Image 1: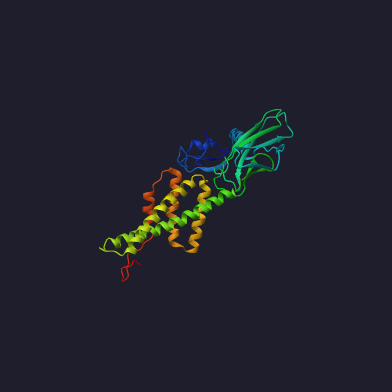
Image 2 (image 1 turned 45 degrees about the horizontal axis):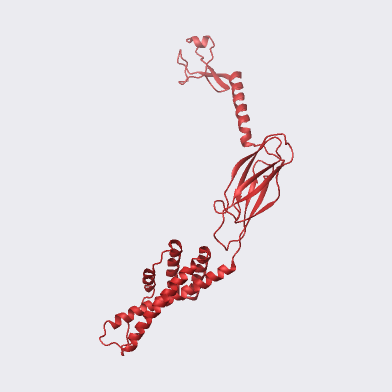
Length: 328
């Protein structure tokens, strides 16, 4: 059965020898375009309109259009609004609640499509994204939604916002949600900066003293009767390292009472300052100290022998001595 509403009809012109031609029989063109009786080429006779086929097509297309209309032209409501233009929520809050109001057609069931959209706040980082259908039942004039808020660890971050939009409401009205940051604890920042500064200077001193101890030890080991001042320098350096080691561990323990994120920011800021001032040895020693401190904050396991070994590798020097045997 052909599904074309209009189709061409053909006839055979071989009246003398063909029964189809003498009977004026009309038929659709065959695959070979020839008469099935005499094998003569078929000639075009007319266009034939099939009412049944055309009606079937109209029915099918109408049904398809009716089914697809809501998809391509979704119904838009005009009677749904937010309770306000903006809602503020503290970052420490677990959720933010936003309310929608229905002003007319209260006796009807209405389904509202609602989505969230990023602003300066990002989904999965600052809040949980929503893409839901909210249904008003007959008699309901108000609906509330709850959106989870994800606290940030960055104390230096500004206030952030995201949007809630109504997809199938005329004009797609939106609502702003402002996440108010907790703010910076200045006392905590100052304590972290001071501790980082002290640790940085201590790490640099330890790196230099450890290298000096290595140089002196290598030099003295090759001398049968080393000078007394060099032996004294060696022992003083040992004492300095021991005191610095004890202070290093004390400062690491004090860091446990501080916010690790504030401390990390203080470390990064201090390293940036050292880099700009081109304090190369202290920058390298502080970089090593940062890795040690962050590992200690995570594991709470002290490993001072390893820490000293790592700091001792920061300074790269060779043993040199003058004519009097003094270390340069």
